[in-house]
Each structure stands twice: as C-alpha cells, then as structure tokens.
Length: 403
Image 1 (cartoon, rainbow, N blue to C red):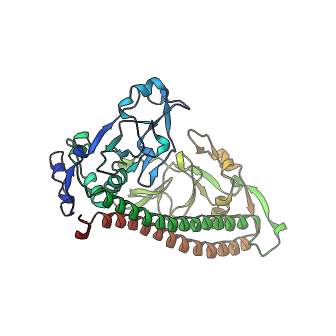
Image 2 (cartoon, one colour):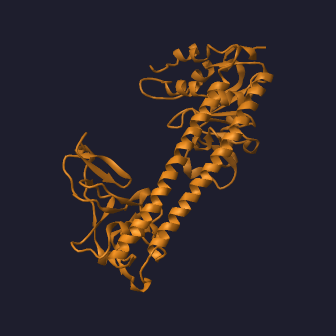
Image 3 (cartoon, rainbow, N blue to C red):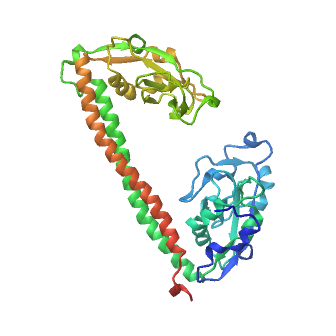
C-alpha cells in the first residue's frame, strides 16, 4: 500500500462504505492540538504538580499512569492551550506508538500534553469514546501507519487530523455502538485475565521445579553426598569475543548475543552448546544455552566445561536459573555481571549420576509447562486479534443502523 500524504489523507476512501454521513474531523472538533516538552526536559519535572501526559501514558486499553511526570504551575501555564478535559480523545501522533488512542479519564483532568500527544475535543455531535474506538479500528490503524509527512517522517500533523474523515451516525447510534464494544471488551478482558493467571501459575510452577532441582527435592540419592562449590572451581568463565556488526553475513553460523541469535557470521567460535550468562545491560543475569557451532559475543559470559566436568552442563543451566540473581548482577543504572561475581557463586554439586536423573525429571516437567505456555500465548494472541475484529465489525455498519 502506498504512503498516504497530507493531500491524499483527505480522500477518506477507507470509510466510504459506511452508511453514515462522512465529515472531516476538523468540522466536528472544538479543539485539535498538541503541546510541547518544557525547556530543560527532564530537569524541570517535579514529584508533584500538574501532570504532563506523554505517549507512554496513552494505550488502546486506557490511560496508564506509569511513568507520568509532573511540571510546576509556571511551566503548566505555558501549556494552558493544551489543558486536558475529561472525555478528550488523546492520540499519539509520532514515533513507534503513533496511532495509539484512548479517552482521557476524569482523574487526569487539568493535565497537559507534550508534542507527541494530540488532544481531540469532539463537539456534542461526536462522542469521545466513539471517536477513540474508530481511530483504534484496524482500517484506521492501517491508514495511520501509512501517513507520511515529507520524504521519510511518519507523523500525524494537525492538518492531517483536521482532514481525517469520520463517520457520524446519530448520537444514540454512537452510544449503542460504544456500549456493545465495551460489553464485548469486558468479556474479552475477563478471558485475558484468566489466561494471565494461568501464565503466572506456570511461571511459579517453573520456578518451583528449578528450586526443587537445586535443593534436592527431585533427588533419589542421599542429599548428604551433595557438595557446595564455587562456580569458578567447576568451569572456566570467559567473556565472549567482540564482533563488529559490519562483519555479520546473511548466512552462516549464528552470532549469539545477550538475548539470543542476533545475526550470522562465516566462522564459529564454539563448536558445542554452551551455558551463557548475559553480562551487560537490561538482560544482565539472563541464562541461555547457545546452539552448537555459533559465535558468542562479549555481551555474554561463557561457562566452559573442563575435559572431565564434575557438573553436568544442563544441570548447571537449571541450577543457575534458580540462583539468586542479586549475587550476580551489580549496578542499577548500568547492570552487569562480572567474571568475579560469577566466579564466587556457590553451586550445589550432586554425584554425576544424580545430576543426570534430576535433569531428566526437570525436563519432563518443563516440557509440559512449555506446551501449556505455548497454548496460553497463542490464546492471548487470538484475544488481540479478536479485539481488532470487534472494532472492525463495529464500524462495518449495517444498513439497518441508518436512522
């Protein structure tokens, strides 16, 4: 689909099939406008004061206060022209979240918005929730995704929004549509909440299995034969190697970074599967098993097994998953795992035969968990598609809705 320019956006071909009058939004809104970030940025934010709404607060499922910042009355005064009222429609107009939309709740009345969020204040003939659901519908989201201003910049300008064509059924019809959408969403959200409870239960069960594995709960032999040893006494701990991304290739052997495979390379650094600890950034402390024949970057610590290991590789992998990550990860602004931290971590070491039996039990249990997690994940994805389907059908109006 070709990009929709400012001029093409006025055509409104996406909604021509609806039976209601099609009107430009500029004719149906008392206000359309975005704000700005106060001079000084984060340095002028305060702990209390007037809320400043940013794109991270605007979501399809409602307003989220997480990350909400505040400005003092002086800075707020400079943004009086974008003071939020209850039932204003808040629309993200730039960046990765372009098109996310919600209705301002009563609790946020009096807030201001920055330059990434647009206030749309409909006239009485157009209900805010109806407009928000219309913008959230799949056809309109696809149209938003193709709006282009200039050669490369994706944004919804005031001019584009004013020319956006919107179906305007009678207000009673709008109310019926909004009520039916919200009834269906309530049912859907109840199902999603149940799935998320199952998901959380599976995570707890996984953690319990791993805890039992390293504490002897799955052991068949005498727990007294277990020893505690430092990780550095069992394996050789090394950083992976630096590999500039310019050396990546389109095919070859996988390059394994902090969060999995990140590219390909024509040579490999490790021939066999390795236990890895992500050691830099947000993924610090995460455990991975690399695929065989891969290049491992310096974002990971590699736990190299000796020729005659005293600990089985997969047993070590599961034990480390249950370990206290606070003993591994240091730093809050820039979290990291160092070789020194990993070296002194205490690890339980049963006899090798016992380790093998425990690994088999863990993997039987976790295979069931993974199957159930896949089912839950697929169901959550279907719920997302169903939400879009509800919106799509809501705005594919039947002729019988014409009044």
